[in-house]
Structures are given as structure tokens and as C-alpha cells.
Image (cartoon, rainbow, N blue to C red; front, side, top):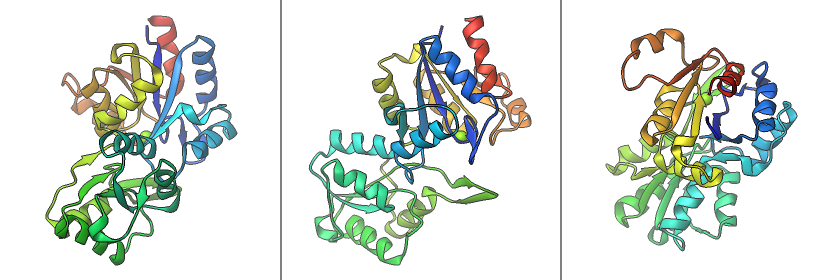
Length: 264
Ligand SMILES: [Mg+2]
């Protein structure tokens, strides 16, 4: 019987600004049955408060500490590995502010920079690219990033995500990003397990993307469930049937997660 339920957000709990029908009821039922829940997002554009507010508005009352995004995981990572590091951040203001609040000094002076921290940044430009380049190439700064996503789903399509910023810096510096903390990194799942206070065998991860959500669960020994309300079509699942990449459960939508309370 699973004690902890780890939910991806976009494509799983909601799509854009629309709740997946029945998602509120399932989450309520899981909570009534004393299951622990966290919501996961790779997107560093919004804060945990923003996500909690959105979920609450859509009918799933949520506290910020029930949300884990790549910003939080990056902050944890840096606090653990480089607590006094001076950072240059390729990212948007809320992300930069969160790192500043965590006590990090932010600088754009290449010779002072110890870590270049890269995130989804819609204000990315040549100026930032050059600072990152000088810091990494000339002064040997570390190069880390929040999430590996190529694109981010938005109303009516998708837009370039963090992979674009990482690739630009890799191309000019000839250095590969050293660490990406977001899904499917084990660093993110470690943060999740700490928040839940559970071991992998007690948890199930439910998401809509094979290469991030399901991969992360598989790599960490956590049971996995794919929902068909997001980016993955049934066709793609047929191709990986009977392979190690096959999710443990296939749900038409998050509402089917309810069955886990009955069957297990
Ligand atoms: Mg998703």
C-alpha cells in the first residue's frame, strides 16, 4: 500500500489553467485516507507559493511546502555543496530572488563567479551568455542547471525551455553542464523523499512524461504510473511494453489513481 503520492503537475493534475476533471476529488480522497502528497514541477518560473495558490484556486487546497520545484532543489543542492558560493544566475527575477533569500551572493563579475546557475530564462541574451562564457571558460566556474526540458507547454503550444540556455552555454564554452537538479535527476527525488519522510518503496510517482517523470521513478526504485491526459499517447506505451521502461501503472487520467486505494 503506497503511503506517499508524488504528482507531476502539468498534464497530470491540470492542463494549463484547467483542472483535469476529478483531480480535486482524488486528492481529497487520498488525503482523507492519510496519504502523503507532494506536487512536483521542473519549472523555475513560478514559486512554490504560486503553485500552491494556483492549485488552491483550481479546487485543491495546497500549502507551499507541499510543492517541490527545481528552484527549491537547486537551493538545497547549492546549500549542501557550495554554501558560500558566489553565483551568476541565468534566470528570471523570482528565481534570482529565491537564491538571494537563501543567502547566496549574486554577482556578474566573471572572476568572482564560482557557480553559473542556469534556469529557464525568457530574458536570456548575449550579455548574459558572455558573462557565463567568461566565468566558465576563463575562470573555471562550475556550470549547473535547474531542468533539462527542451520546451515548456503553454496555452496553445509550447515555448523554448532551459535546454536552450544550457545548449548555448555548452556550445560556446565547450563544457558540458555538470549537474541538472530537476526531473529526472535523483537529486530531485532525494528532496521529495526528505519532504515526505518516506523510503522509495512506500511511494508512487504519477506523471505524464516517460523521459522525466517515469524515468526518475524507475531510476530511484519508486513505483510509477503514467497518465494519458498529457504528452504521452497510448501508441508510445505500446512500443515500450515488456521493457524495463514500462510504467507500473497506466491511468487514463488521475481519477483512476483512486483504484490504488482499493486494490492495494
Ligand atoms: Mg507533466
